[in-house]
Length: 206
Image (cartoon, rainbow, N blue to C red):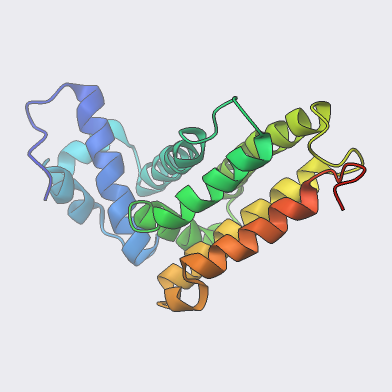
């Protein structure tokens, strides 16, 4: 259980409820999560939860919307605007792989939520998370195009979605206990092949 939230400012109590909900929904999904357990995990009385979220569904949506930026921050923290954009993407991919444990709950939450995409607001929250990441990677690739580093004819959004697919593979293997299928040396080899497929080949460098 987290430190009791009773004496914290309202915005901090709300955030603690969201974080407790992320933990609970990641394990049990929407249907198997009890709001009373979420409240206890945040250190508040169960009735207090409804001061911040009028329903379990609103709490769930808040948990999803908060998780997206947290996952994106893992990428944004590494994706600086200096140097070779492809090497930046390389570092981003390795950082995402290396932090599989620290992002585990957020990633598991997204996998759980994929079963709820018949709800338009759940679908919108998931889509917003993925498209924000695609936008970031595509911007790096467009920068690489302008610098003559990335292939001029590359569809940068398709390449960015390919990057997302790789990250989802890392998450999937982590959650089903098959991390050994892609240890770090294999990830590095896979990553280099991806980066090399994007790089402009200059005359005389073949």
